[in-house]
Length: 290
Ligand SMILES: Nc1ncnc2c1ncn2[C@@H]1O[C@H](COP(=O)(O)OP(=O)(O)OP(=O)(O)O)[C@@H](O)[C@H]1O
Image 1 (cartoon, rainbow, N blue to C red):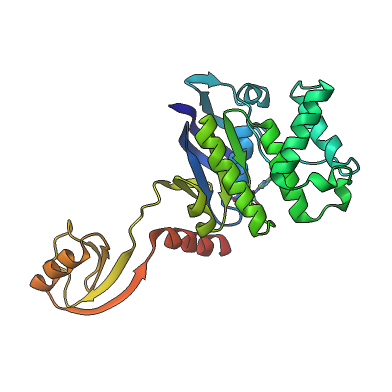
Image 2: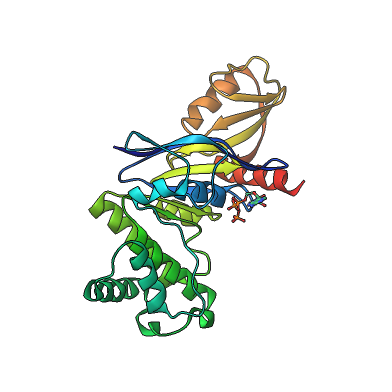
């Protein structure tokens, strides 16, 4: 079932930076990995959806209902991004503030919820520690605790694994998988690391220069670049012709395709294997560095 639909969201910061005509949907039970290099637009996308920043144009629908693009609307579907902290307050007080903002003030309930979430994120021993004394990894854990307390049917996590040790990363993965399965919620999380993303998500969205360049499953076949004597006679439906002596062949049914090519022309060299996702991120890198 579709929970969220984004239609042509644009947030233009100028100089080609921001988010451009970004559309996607989000269904119950999905864990979407949002991947892109630094500056690709991941945070802008998550902040636009959460209402932290205001988009220039576009539409957001929640369960088919059209919402405005101002932040107040988001409250109704309990979305969470890693929020900021009050540095001079301690762990308990920071989480209490989140619960108060969500209308939960009963002392007993507040206490129970905070104790339970601190146990999940492994911060139960630093309940009274001020955030200004926290390490980066501890802040990431606290950010995840805040996301848990804030989350309703959708959870948005901006680079939740950065700065976390192996235990911390596993804690986030296990919690997310468990919640999505039990509560049928939907999660979108961003990261640069393809392996980390693949280990958690069941759908992948790749963003480059503020635009969506891939949206689909993880089962993306690598392709192989083959140098041939002459590509002119090769059927376009079998391979992708790059130039007169180079073709790109996807790994699926590779042997059959190679047999077909060798019937028509001579293969002179098999050059390299390309993982399309890595290629997308590499190209992105080059573009961003210009
Ligand atoms: N308030 C702003 N004003 C102007 N430009 C901005 C603003 N916020 C972000 N940008 C620019 O928009 C682009 C996208 O930024 P964003 O933070 O969404 O990228 P990101 O994919 O989350 O990057 P990272 O992986 O480094 O967190 C970047 O080039 C960034 O410098």
